[in-house]
Structure formats: C-alpha cells, structure tokens
Length: 307
Image (cartoon, rainbow, N blue to C red; front, side, top):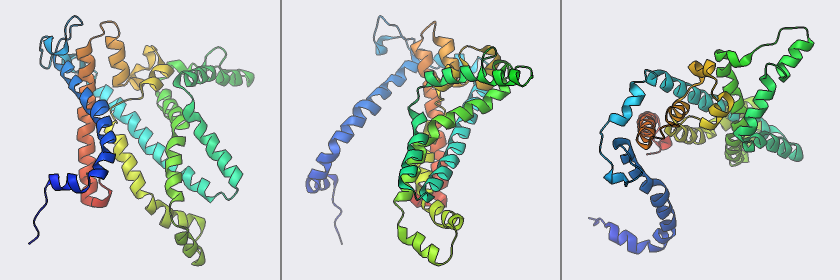
C-alpha cells in the first residue's frame, strides 16, 4: 500500500517549482487578497480622523441607501442587461471576425485588418464621448447635418432613452471586441493544420471547416472567457456610461447602472461605507453567479469548469 506523502514532502521535492511560484503568490496576496480587508468599511461609519477599526460599527446600515432608494432592482437589471449584451454579442462578433480573418490568405492584408480592428481598444472613453457628441449633437452633429441637407427634421438623440440602449452597446462593441478577437485568433492559430487539410481532402467547404473544426476547438477558450466575464458582470463600465451620458437625467431610466448611481449619490458626501457596501453587493452577486454557472458547466463537461 502506497503511503500518502504530505505537503512538507511536496515542498522539499519540488522546492524549485515552488520558488518560481512564490513571486506570483506574493503578487496576489499583496494586490488581491490584502485589499479585501477593506470590506470592513461596508459595516462601519468611517471617520477620516480615525482608523478603519476605530470607526463605529453600524452593521448593515450602509446598505440601506441601495434598497431604500427604490432603484436597486432597476439598477441591477440595467447593469446585468448591458453586461450580458456586451458579453454575448462581443463574443459572437469576436469569434466570427476571428474566423473570417483566419481564412484570409494575404499576409499583409490580414495583419493590417487585424491592427485596424484592434486599434479602437486604445481609444479612451473621453475621446469616445467626443466622437459620440459630434455625431449626435442636435445643432451641428453629423447625423442632424445629414438630415438637414436632405430636407428632414433634426433628431434630438439626447432625449430618446431607448435609442441609447443600442448606441451604448454598439459603441462598446466597436471599442472592445478587437481585444477578444485577438485572443480567439490566437486560439485558432494554435489549431493543428492537419484537421483542416484532412477536411479539405474530404471536400469540406470553408463554412463546414469553421463549423465542425474551428468552433468546437474554440469552446474551451469561450467558456474560460465567459466565466471570467461573469465574475465582474455587476461591475458596469463606469467610464463608458458616465462619459457618454454624463448628467443627462432624461436618459437615466435606460442607461443608469449601479456604478453611475453610486457615484452621483455619494460624490458630495464621499461616504466610504456606502460606496464599499455597493461594491460588496456587486462582488457577492458576481461571485454567486460565477459559482452557479461553473457548477452547471461542471455537470455538462467537467473539463471546461474553472474549479
């Protein structure tokens, strides 16, 4: 009967590997785990004249401004809805474009196209807001200038809440899908050419090769990116929403998310406790969601689960 070896034996036997792992462990301990002590801010009335643990404990009082606002449900639904659209449409678009780029045989054209699609990722949200404003400004925007030249009435886009559901999604995808597209393209590049050569010999078309070879091979990458995205699904794209919408109250019903609401509510009082409480709510919601989705994936196919 083989005797089980303990952790000490593993440390001694694989000491070089553990030493190589040590910088990574220290990095996460310092930058990811030690800041988690700040969760305690959510349960105290923080006083800038004293330390965190000297501030009076108030229990769940800091969470009251969320559920007593009467907007918690709508804010949660808005945040979830936008992020689900970003994740779903972003992955579909990224996979489709990555497959199309992989089929391009011209080396320089392929690299140029990839760079052009990736370039918007480096555009700041401030610049994006300027682009959007110049497109939809009522007086001199590109859209209304075209409409006026055609003899049509101008449209005040900044008073149409429903339209911004689509505009925000479109501009987010334009800016960010190039990043995940590069990841999927790298995964496609790693697929052995033997599969495609065998499929070509059997007479498979480009569509059939993409459907029966490329997409199944991308499943693992897709699931990993999906689980990573779900972990922060309640963390709205604050820069995107605040820069594009700003303080336009006419659009709050369809564009207000948790991050923008918390910022507007606390930018005067600067309450550490309430802000941390909102962050704790977002983190717990995201953690529960990723655990549930990972459990479902583990039951369907254990190889694709994160844990």
